[in-house]
Length: 180
Image 1 (cartoon, rainbow, N blue to C red):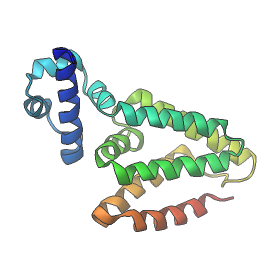
Image 2 (cartoon, rainbow, N blue to C red; image 1 turned 60 degrees about the vertical axis):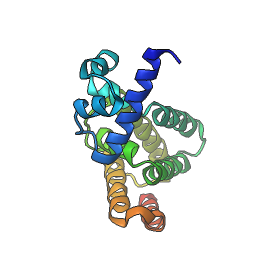
Image 3 (spheres, rainbow, N blue to C red; image 1 turned 45 degrees about the horizontal axis):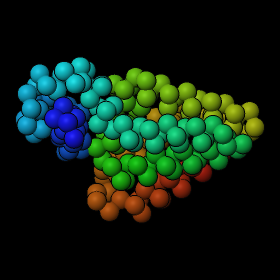
Image 4 (cartoon, helix red, strand yellow; image 1 turned 135 degrees about the vertical axis):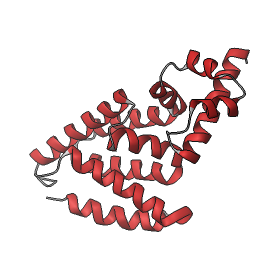
């Protein structure tokens, strides 16, 4: 591996660890220190915090993009919406660092503008189609989706390391509440 690529990978690994541990408010100086590079090196490779976060979680965002595409191809928009929500909630159980980035971006509207806008576009389209088919509540909005994801994040945090059972119970209750 070239030295430049090796530094890039160290920066991204340090960023993922730091974001998982402290959230996105961690300083670039700490990430640089943990990666064994200068702050200037981090900024040369990732000129904005959004780009650092997006690159740190590129694999997860790529998975989300594939999930979005699959959801839009599903002939049953209500089922696609439920599966999308289940999968996103499963991510929250598996990867706490990505969850923080995702919740901050999609729920709070902080950062990762492209990724957030794409997620909202897909949710809005699925909601519109499912509402037109009469399979989900007519009053649901993208904002309700944000609340659902934020609430699940709270369930995961409150339940601690063994949150799977609480997550499933929450999902069962929330998905039933979406029905028309």
